[in-house]
Length: 152
Image (cartoon, rainbow, N blue to C red; front, side, top):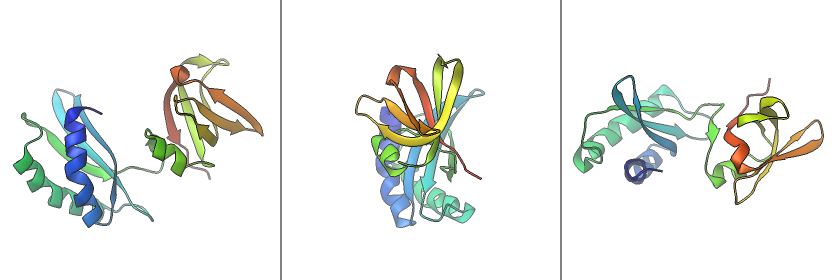
């Protein structure tokens, strides 16, 4: 995490908790010539537009006062989403046994992604999934992204 996102995370966590939510992720990215500060929130049972609005309204004056970003930016609060990206070790622990898609930097076994049940993530970032009863491990150097997958 960058210093900006770490600072915003520290400011946002108690605000989100006060609104009954948790911060899933913070992004500070440049897109189409503008800077965006995005806060992704989650809560049991899912996030509503009202939750996003409540967190945004409560956090906006705190960000204005703390001024963690010296330039102008667009502030957005949204749900982490059903098919969210798993990043932190706790994310992987929380979703053990769930369906995930492991995307690769380069094709592995001839494909750019594998989908299966999340079995583990090691301290060095290797990810193991179960596909048709077989466990497949991918070293961290092959793992570009791990995302939850909706099952129908």
